[in-house]
Length: 121
Image (cartoon, rainbow, N blue to C red; front, side, top):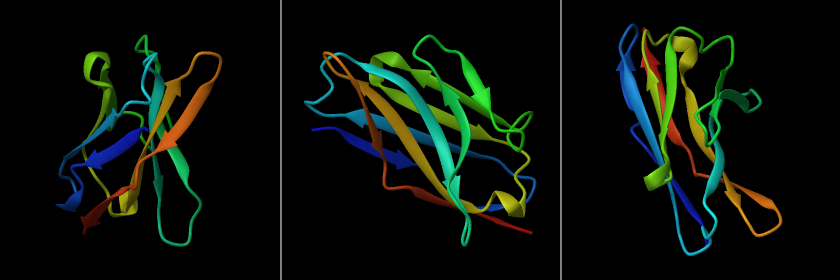
């Protein structure tokens, strides 16, 4: 089994910062975790990718996140972080973590349950 658990959401004032954490754990992680990423879904909208990071540390960001958000990871702990600065009300959403767990011959994508981030104006 693999468990993906996010933490760090909450209510933040516009212009403020928040740091999300996500840990992947469980007996199903035998060969490690490949790419990890953060997504978000606002009410009435589709889930969108915010940032991803490979095991080697290569990052990619959505245009909405560039310059404000930073993704990082700790491979030893199978943990990924999202530092969010200069938050805007439009950043309000449920933030989901994705972990691509490596199997013997395939990669299996796992999702967390999500953590709410609400940015007040």
